[in-house]
Image (cartoon, rainbow, N blue to C red):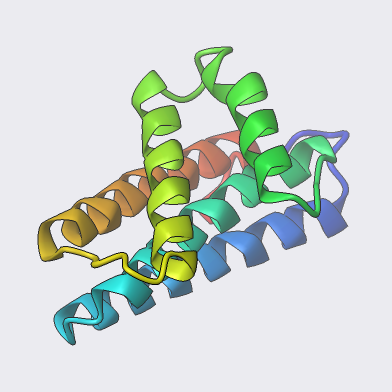
Length: 139
C-alpha cells in the first residue's frame, strides 16, 4: 500500500467497489427478469461507484455525478491510466441512465441493456485491477 494513503480512504474505496459489484449483480438479475430500464440504472451506478472508488484514494469526491465523471476522465483517462473507450462507456451509461430514469417514453431495448451491462463489467474489472495494483494487494 502507498505510504501516504490513510486507511479511512482505503476502506471507503473498498466499500465503494463492493457497492459497484452489488449494482452490477443487480443489473444482471434485472436483465434476466427483462427489467431493462431498471437494469440500465443499476449498470450506470455500478460504473459510478467504481469511479468513486478510484477517486477517493486521491481525496476527491463530489455530490454531482458530472463532477465525478469529469474528474475521473481528467485524472485517469486523459492521463492514460484507463483506455479512452472507458470514457465512452461512462458517457453512454450516463445518457442511457438519464433516459431510462427521466424520459417518459424511453423504451430500453434488450440489446442496448446488454451492452450497458457488458460495459459496466469492463469498467468494474478495470477498476478492480487498478485498485489491487495501486494498493499492492488483492481487493
